[in-house]
Image 1 (tube, rainbow, N blue to C red):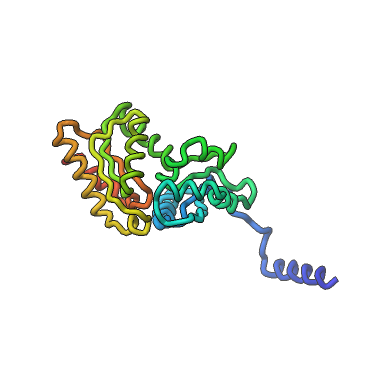
Image 2 (cartoon, helix red, strand yellow):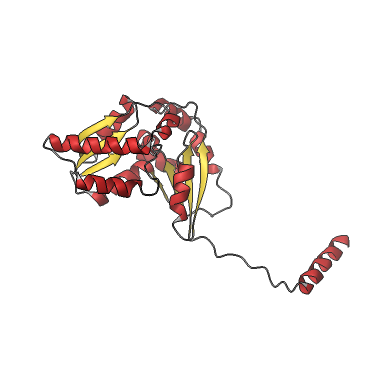
Length: 241
């Protein structure tokens, strides 16, 4: 009885305040589920800024608990085998049927695990991963067999695997450089101006060799290469070089 009385009082107060029926905002046009590695410091900032420019789009983040900070195959293989990646995905299972699209936000994890194992993580729901997105971007920006100048922060082993995968995808890597950093904390601390300098130096090296580069690829989402204005300015500089 007390509960009923309280409800009656609430309704009476709402009437006196002239409050109408409860109204809800329109549902999001899309909800993006971003699956990050725990050491990722950049997606929280850059990803949210980029998505904020898309009306009606919402972003949700989850982190994969990695066994170590080192960006290498062993770290990713362990996280896959012990179920850490699957657990991170499951952490965004609620609200039910809320997510429109999923994405793995780590380039090296994506190309290390490969298409089949990434697909197995998501089943029948819409998803993408960073490496698949790189290839899609290259197809949009260049022609088949394009010459690529490539910059990554990776250690030699991871960098060389990335080079091989570009070759396998039909691209010719005419110049490449790896900074040799082992952890995301260091990669994310690299000054974006230095990233731009390296990219321009690679393009110039490719041109000086007589090959030339059709496109410059900056690998690894831990680089701060998606800050507002960065890509536009770099493309302008490269076009004038």
